[in-house]
Amino acid sequence: MKKMISLVILTAMVMSLAACGKNVVDTKTVEKSSQQTETTKKTEATKKPEEKTAVKSDGYKKFSQVKIGMTESEVNAILGKPKKVDKAYYYYDIVVNGKDMEITVWISKVTGKVTYTNGDFYESDYRDEFVDVKTDLSKAKDLESKKIKTYDECVSAFKTSGHLTSVHEDGRKTYLWVNSNKGYLTVTFNSDGSVNSFSGYC
Image (cartoon, rainbow, N blue to C red; front, top):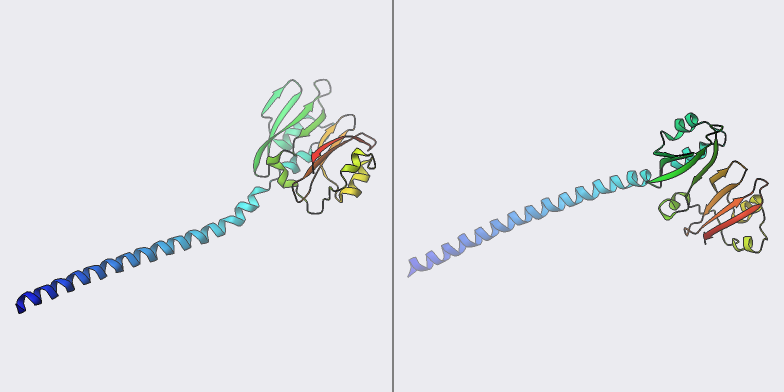
């Protein structure tokens, strides 16, 4: 009987040790997994500022360097080779807000000079790059009532100078304003600075 009891106790101890051994392994696995998770978090935390910095681009800066009267070679030196050419329309790819964007440059077949540039920077994919907390579009309605009639009056009313997004050979220019709520306004001005047309969502 004593031998039977000893055998039962011995078996229980072995099972208990085996269970403890399993728990230790599990604990180490959990610790290792936890360490890997912490390492991953640290790596991601390190990457986030880089990714945030990479969102912005020099695409708009390049676009704004293209001027009316430039030659094709001068434009290509700034924007690279065009993605495609359709008659006098030259299409170039730039990167804005971390996304590919197509801009249009008209190069006259007669003069060989730029007569028109345009980029749809107001589109939602690109708009974030132009957000300015100083921009105030609360007076945008004054364009409809014609209280605001010129570019200078727009600058005064909207608190910032806006971003040039289109230029015509006849002097017409289009500017974009984007506020901190991602509301936007595009206004086209005549060569004398007077308002020609406008659109947007404020």
